[in-house]
Image (cartoon, rainbow, N blue to C red; front, side):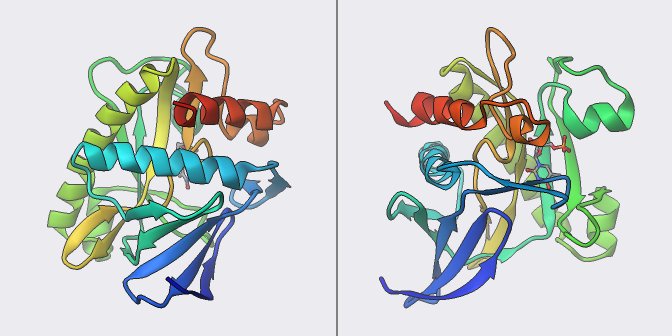
Amino acid sequence: MEKLEKIYEGKAKILHKTSDPDLLIQYFKDDASAFNGKKKGTIVDKGVMNNHISSRIFEYLEENGVKTHFVKSLNDREMLVKNLEIIPVEVVLRNVAAGGLCKRLGIEEGRIFDEQPVMEFFYKSDPLGDPMINECHVDVFGWATKEEVEILKSAGLRVNKLMVEFFKERKIRLVDFKLEFGRHKGEVLLGDEISPDGCRLWDWETNEKMDKDRFRFDLGRVEEKYQQVYDLICAE
Ligand code: TMP
């Protein structure tokens, strides 16, 4: 498998072509950004930890019947993934009130949603700052078909259920997280990464934050908390 030219560089990852047009190499950087790129910084070894954390979670999801772009981990910072046509709709699942939901709706942080998670859609657009959208926008503007939206919803709920259990076994509360999907050979696959960059993770006992909110709000001990998540997930 030969690594060819870079085809995309985002805030936290780089995608390279390979000698197989169906496969890409996803490289994880240490760069961190927040508030739509207004805050920038580095989290030492984040790329290594997020690559391993994401690999482990994709493996777990695949073992449980979720179709993902993950093929295999290549080294500390790279994984081999299927080449997706990205659907520009971010799916956010929330089990506990935090972040944007509290700000937007005035719900107190920490309220637990016992009955069902809250699901939200955002339009994936850096220039627009990923605005919140609904199914009607997705349909009218053609970002995904009605069938695809049904897959995003059912896969989102299934992934949430699996991940809540996965993290609970490791004494972590999965507060919320973001998923991205893409098309590949007629199927919709889960893409991107699953790591403390795109999930809110709280210590089950103390509610201490173990995710990118530590970077966003200058809470300190960022690397230490990423490392703890890494150890709980990858040192099995
Ligand atoms: P929010 O509270 O800022 O809307 O974010 C909800 C969760 O989704 C949080 O874990 C961060 C993640 N997220 C991203 O990683 N990228 C995004 O563009 C969005 C909208 C959310």
